Image 1 (tube, rainbow, N blue to C red):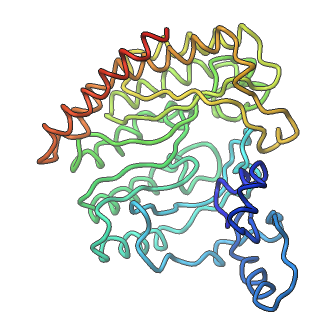
Image 2 (cartoon, helix red, strand yellow; image 1 turned 180 degrees about the vertical axis):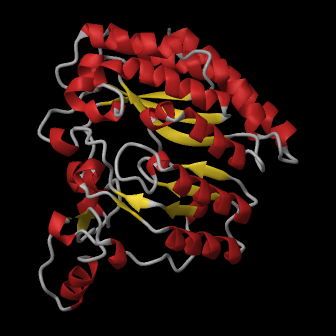
Length: 345
């Protein structure tokens, strides 16, 4: 087994034994999977956990095209990340961007299969596709999106992008949005806010704000989120509670950011700190460690969702023949959830 969540199996040894999992691979396995399968077939001992080393990571030419339609039309634009956040495994990997021709081949395969109706462009920061630093490459991004929109009738989404890349070039982002919104009314992505504290930003994610300074992180968040809202992007945003050496004032700064974003169409999801990346030797943040400010932040994020849920449901079902019925069903469900949460509060 492998994949982005393979690290979780280290914390579930009983699950691994119960399901007879022989080997769990962490990292990009193109250059190691063949050897492991050969050893298994020949009856040789194979490792329970295998971490792909930097020397084993495939070069661009060693990464094959997909040969079957991908789940949800997901198409990789590249691998790795240049942001260097301390809490993330992906930043430990070399940044490589695929040539446009490879991406086009995979989009074509999905489209011609008849099994995929849309396209999710996947990278740790789609806005930086083809760039050599943290400055977006306008020509490559526009060529990519013109091709993707032309080929996909079912709509375009992004897997991830950074607020700093959006905030640094709002005109380019608007041009991309204009291309995408020719065929759809909104689009989505996942982004990391993580914190509203400039102190935490400087300590564990200083390059997340680049080309701005880490001290400006809170303003980068406000600017980037505002640009997304104006261009009908709906981001699912993550926050990290309980990072090492977190102080009360850090939590308050994050709460202030969430409050400032109340008029920005989005989902905001608080997560507990998990020791990954260069912080893998730190302790997990556990539910028992939550203080009153953490709880207030949690409820604040839930209220943000309730504020936007009706609008998001309208957008989600706007073009579907069953939209009116599904919309009312989910609104009813959201109403029940609101009452339950407010009883807890």
